[in-house]
Amino acid sequence: MLLCVTASHQTASFELLERLSRTPDDVASTLVELTPCVQGAVVLATCNRFEAYVEMDEPVTAAGAIGVEAVLEAVESATGVSAAELDGAYAVHSGRRVAEHLFSVASGLESVVSGEGEIAGQVRRALKSARKDGTTSPELERLFQRASQAQRKVKNVTALGRAGRSLVRLALELADSRIADWSAERVLLVGTGAYAAVTLATLRERGAENISVYSPSGRAEIFAAKHGIRPVLAEDYARTAARSSLLITCTTATEPVLGPEHLRRPVVGAATAGCPVGAHSQLVVDLGMPRNVDPAVATLEGVALLDLETIRLHAPLEELQATDAARTVVREAADTFHVVGERQSVTPSVVALRSHIFALLETEIDRARTRGDEDGKVEQALRHLAGVLLHTPTVRAHELAATGRAEDFTTALAALYGIEPEQPGAAASATA
Image 1 (spheres, rainbow, N blue to C red):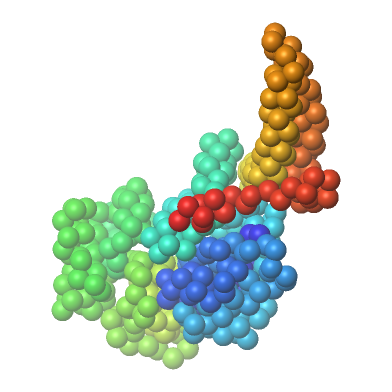
Image 2: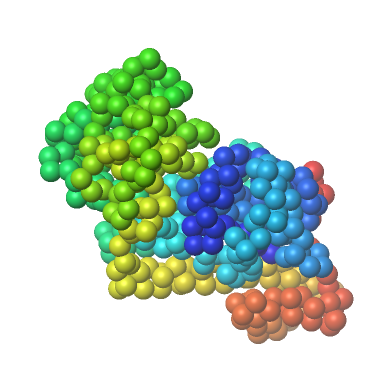
């Protein structure tokens, strides 16, 4: 049984998501260790969501409730966020709903900006991390691999990718209202990770030329040399920040890396209401999660702060046709995922029935041979009869599986023939 516990920008505050995203690495391993019926776990932690995908041992009574409780306990252990704090801030998906949800997430349909592209890579990295930690399972592997396939199909056959925009692009579009000439802006980029590289490329697309970079972790010189911009040393950081007209932060630091002390003295009551990108001398764009910028910088005279929560409020309406087409692709992909999964689940029962029938067949063929079946016509007739007898049960097994009733076929085999199909993992366990 698949289960997903999700807290996102749709259900939780950005402050809560910040706390969840600070130390997500131990959640999956803690989950697997906590509860024996948890067969695998993959955690997806981004700036807009925190999700735990879990495979439960389905025969366990109340597996869903046990799984949710285990997730909440693991989250509290790893992040310090208690179940009480999460109450009302998360949603639970189980069974068939899990695949459609993940496929939607991977395709950018559940993002702040519909269709944004960064989430696809984050989904792939979540699976890679689970593999590294040894917490994934065969069904979770299949789920996440199919999610990537669904995302690529959405991108290729719908206009969602063209309609949606990344958070970086949206933030810079919001900044357009105050920037007449991007080439004249003095830009300070704080951060040197993959997200910083995307930000730098987007800045250059808009014509920005005067760009410097600072790294709280000391990697500014390497990043600057690779991308042809100026590095900023730690002792020059505050001075450069105060002189920059556009500051963009995108680090993985768990504490703010930019505060009032790096810019100007706060002026009480100077916070500007309304659109954050009006006529200001400095614009600070905080793309970090947890937040990279102390909210107090918004109280500085002439400084505007644009953070992820504000970006969400300014996100454009979804282009309905593109979104509808994408959701159709996602639903079809989820349906296919379940049909394949159910067919796989009934396969041991079909194999068991065929093995039973063919064992009886070989016995009868041996008997016919001892009675003088020299031309093999009796054997031929018996084999044909076995094939005819197996055809309808096999077709019916797959039909039942496609509607989620594979267990009915297994139960019927046990009642009629006393057959108990071998589970997929049993042979491997015995071999080990």
